[in-house]
Image (cartoon, one colour):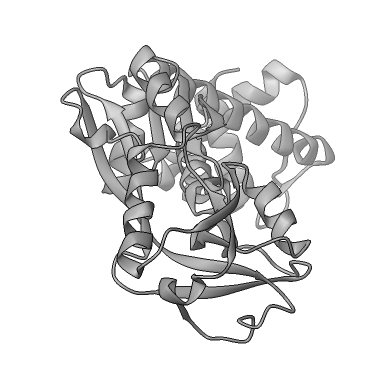
Length: 297
């Protein structure tokens, strides 16, 4: 028994014709008939009832058809895996992302890449922006999805691409006077208690300074009641009516039936957050290279 015999058998079974199967593989009818006969002799069973027109599978032939297809499929899979291994398309891709970005379209990119390259294991790490940046530089991650709270774009040994331009929204509890508004400006939040979402583990990051500058332009310094990079805790405190928060819309877009939470767009110049994908120059293995090419192609 060999691969060609299995292929010819399946072709005859599906076309119910030795002639059509022979034409499919560009060989003579005599050759394909001989191959099927040799297969039947090796198995000591009759696979086709040749007295019918068109020919039909015998009960044994019906059983073997499913098995032959499964064998050919496994062989194709094995060949594909070997070819992928020979070109480097196996291994691990380590992806770091900023807290909250798990609700974005990132999972769609990861799923599509996994389906195309199933032999590459994608491992994911959810961190604040400081740990993402340091982890990239020491080799913990191959690529990170972050917003530039560490001024990482100024580093000479990284490459980056803009991934997401996410508008900001105001997170309010349901009974808040602004809850029915269709939009808000930062100037209107002057007297509010702010549950401040910081992307980093420090209070004076590049990103924090950017947002403090937006408050300065609005004419005041915010009354920060609580500071955290834990999105879930901030949302829980807003729902408990302890204050309000300003969040990127990728955090809130997929939230449905959020208990006692309302999200109102924040309008005005600079009221957005940019997510960038960052990786180190000159250290692209094939998994990372294919991932970058797929996202930005």
